[in-house]
Length: 124
Image 1 (cartoon, helix red, strand yellow):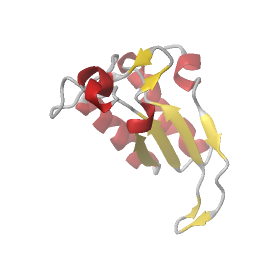
Image 2 (cartoon, one colour; image 1 turned 45 degrees about the horizontal axis):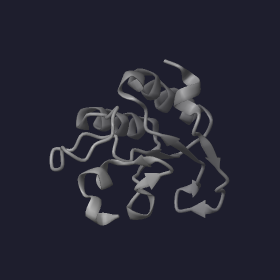
Image 3 (cartoon, one colour; image 1 turned 90 degrees about the vertical axis):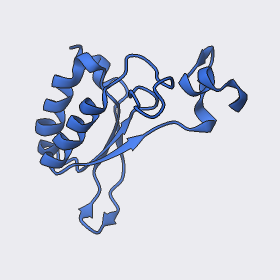
Image 4 (cartoon, one colour; image 1 turned 120 degrees about the vertical axis):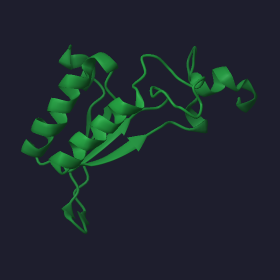
């Protein structure tokens, strides 16, 4: 796995305000590609706790296969089981996982149209 690709969208969040469990130390990443799951799981389990990160914002968008809406998907997509393994790894590491999906204001970018508008162009 190319670590640069997995971490290219990483952005440390300058959040240090006190929360009920202490200071929030967060990181925002794109969800891994299916072939990068092993590296992503190791990163969550080993690197995040070591660096004191307690919150992970993981941007999935439409790169998750949905049982309810199988036609709304962008490739390469994770399976529900892979998403569950990411959540389990975060729980074991003491990291709060916050999934992110871009909603109506972010359904296309330049010349790229994402899954929701491809399936439902009436939303544009």
